[in-house]
Length: 160
Image (tube, rainbow, N blue to C red):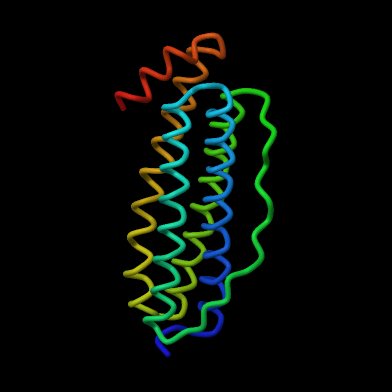
């Protein structure tokens, strides 16, 4: 086995976090779809798909490393949002949590001197930079435009 039991467990936990994020982004997409904001909905569906793909990457890594995949129970996503700003802020907050969890996995792989895991996790570190940056930018634009200008934001999202 190329990963310790401890790292295996933590990665299994991360699989759950990625699937939870996927479900949360799908819930956010539904929020926007219900308000006829198709481009916002499309953006968050894409995010949902990306998170599911991240979970699959972790699953494959565990299998390739000779570990055991145990997908934890996934909590139900939040479904009620008061505004588009609240949705995007929640997405950014979630990405901050995920970033911290990825960093903790990297720290564990370093402490265990596991170069294979460290190399694998490097991709996720770079990915989190992109995720955080795009959500921070989107939140800034949503805050500047306000709830009454969401149709203009649809055009912005379709061109970004």
